[in-house]
Length: 407
Image (tube, rainbow, N blue to C red; front, side, top):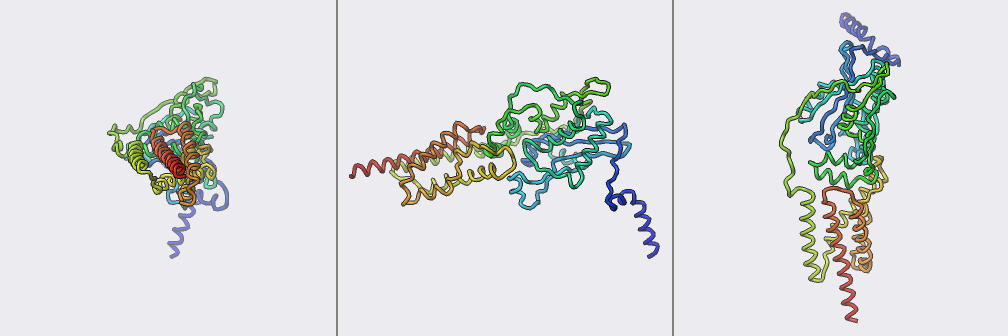
């Protein structure tokens, strides 16, 4: 037993340099990087494993062979198993955090998912490398590593960009702004072409702030844009000379050119809503000829529109995303459809039907002109709703004419 205690005590003494300062409430001194230290930006290409991978990913790598340091700093960590995950994600309060791993711990995952890996070696001075390393390590402290993710403004690409800029100061010069042509929405849609349902849902959910045309700096909410902008940037050295900030670029993994796995045509949103519109249009015409209107169709259609509208409204007023405000989709997905459609279609309230569907039709027409959602599927759904509005209005007018003739 005494020998065992002696062995344990010896082990604790050997480990003391790493644990004693923390035990007594003292912070560990920051390691001083050697002249051989390298700083690089790692850019992972877009993937198809889930919606969060569609836009790629960015990390900062600090490599110092003299100190045995090889650390990738990633601002993309979050916990799928956190309490109320969906609610927090929709509200924009899901905590993201800075995580640290080695490059080679991540390579296998990205290779398995056939996603490119590119490394840009940054031409920073030793002082700038040390400052960046110190800032990243400080940011990695438990009390500092969490942040509130915002898709366009504060994410896994903007944070590395900001950390590099902070470490370099005014010596880092990004390329002169080009003519502004693309909005946040346009950049986003460049990456969603193979995910039509995700593209439809995300475009309906975002509002007017997403239509702001971006500067070069603002467009760097996407990892590929950070990569491209840094490739064109310069940095001023101690002697005053302007040199490229990227000294070399290498592709660590080139994905295979696999055949695109497109959705079957019947599963595309435009096809689904075209079929839905044709079927309901035919039913509506047949019922109109017969002098009747199906109330359950209106309750299902406008009830669904109302539920979607309430979701969009909550994304506007009860979230912290910053891009879901002033959403023109609320014209045709009016929240008050739920419960108004059930109220006006009751027998005793049918005198309000003409007014309700008249206002609804006007809002849908406004929505047709204000919407900026690509693909056309939403327009087909709007036209389906408009057909139902016209059918209900005409049915009321026909009933009024028949009543007038009887009198």
